[in-house]
Each structure stands twice: as structure tokens, then as C-alpha cells.
Image (cartoon, rainbow, N blue to C red; front, side, top):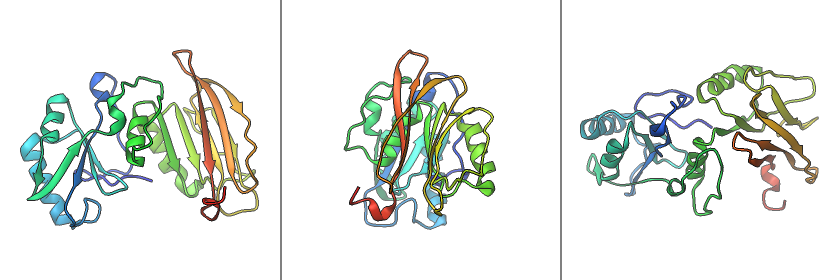
Length: 245
């Protein structure tokens, strides 16, 4: 899971500062021709685009290439955001710059309904300011734990949903900022497993799920500082069962 950074590669995103500017949604830049996306283009073309971006609007606070190949730019302020939204081309290639659909609803600590037309990247962007993150670990074993702990220290989420942990009953990882760990392992199998990490400052109660044996699901109802409960569920469905479950 980690989007590729265009301007200055780093594996996890940086922790967002407090304040109103941290609420600015990323500008999503989409190349609209049939040539390679930001994800697939040659590194030399990326560098030329990087130079043009900085020349036009100044260096942004951060940027990353999303899973679908679009570029997400985290701007310093609304003025810089407005400049990026006016972009029509980069290196002669047509671009469409917009804000995520979910950004048009005001959000502060409470997850509202996300329009079904939003892409995966837009939903993740909508959750970014909610102090919630999801990590598809594909095996969160000892070799990956330090990387994940580093990610948690930078992002500092209050809730982290994990899937494909590959944990078993003999493995008990610990996380400094997340004392509460709800988990459902997949014994005797080499895949699957789900967990929810909850900040030690939050109160919660487990949610009971009774899915089929082929599915792992674990849930928690969490009481946030505004005295509202939000229910979270982390689910793992093996690919072979995606169409039948």
C-alpha cells in the first residue's frame, strides 16, 4: 500500500500539522491523453514535470502518485491550491486538475457518508483528515513491523484498520501509541487475518460479527471526543470468494 512520491520519495506520508491549512484536500492531477500515467512514465519525464510544477506554483508541501496513476498534490495554502486547479497542461500533455469529490463536504473528526462514485483514492483522501488509516499489510510479520511502526509515528492515526496481517496466536506485537489491539487471526493458513488498532485515549466496545468461515471480520464501536460513536469493521475476503460472499 504506499503511494509513490513524485517530488521527494518517502515511503510513508508525513504527519500533518495542526491548523486549518492541514484540512486542505489534495489537488488530484489526471493526465487525459493516452500516454503513460504518472505511475508508468519514464523518470526523466517525471523530473521535467517536477521542474515545471515548481516553476509555475512553487514547491508543494508534498505529493504522491496514487494507485490509479494520478498525481495528488498537497499544497501549502489556498493560493497555491488555486494555481494548481487552473493547470491545463504539463510538458505539453493535457491535464485535468480537481479536488476529490469527498472534499466538498465539511469534515472534522466525524466520517460522513462517502458518495459511491468516489474512487478508492478519493475515499482514502476523505479519511485522511479523520485520523483514520487502513493498511493492507500482506503479512505484518517481524520484518515489516518496524516500517509499520515508523508509519504510525508519522501519521499518528487514532484508529488503524489492518488486513492480511498473517498473525497467529503465538505472535503478540506491541505498539506504543495504540494500547488497544483487536484482532482475528486465521489459524493454519498462510494468508488473511484482520485487526484494529485503537489509540489509548479512546473508549470502545467490540462489535460481534458472525461471517462465514471463509471471511475474517472484526469490529469496534469507538467513542470519539465529540461524544459520537463511530463503528469500524476490518474485513478480509480471499480473492477466490469475492464474487460469492
